[in-house]
Amino acid sequence: MAKALQIVLCLVVLATLGMLCVGVIMFKESKKISGFNIVFNVVQDSPSEARAYYTENDFYTILYVSKEQIAPLFGEARDEFGHKVALIRNDLPEDVKKFVTYHELYHLQDTRYKSRFSRELNANLAAAPYSFIGFAKTIFMTITDFNRIKYYMQGAGE
Image (cartoon, rainbow, N blue to C red; front, side, top):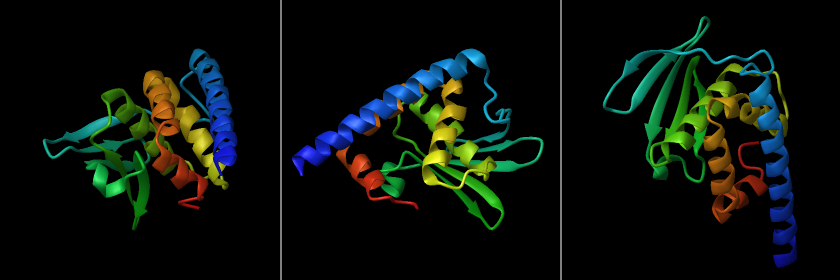
């Protein structure tokens, strides 16, 4: 079991390094990835930590929730009866919170990618240019948290 965990961690580190390299390249190229450009206008910014955003075509609600509500996830995108909601943990560092917010907003907009891997890869690539430090910290926080690794290895959310 320990050998398998070492192999998994090695693969995660290699994938992380690859994603960081791609993120740097994409950051240098443009903030537009796969035809996706995040341009949001704040509609509401309330003390309850709920924010509303809209683009030309859609309206999104961002709810900042406690760790206990969605852990081990950092964020979650939901389409509840046509209302698009992103849940983001409020205990995250600000730059991680910013990255996760853009990551989840990407999920709410992009339905082209069918496999979990391609959905996550594209959401990471789309959000990284908006908070590259948050992206790097998110990767570090993920590879150092056994519960998150276990959650993703079990194929949660498939």
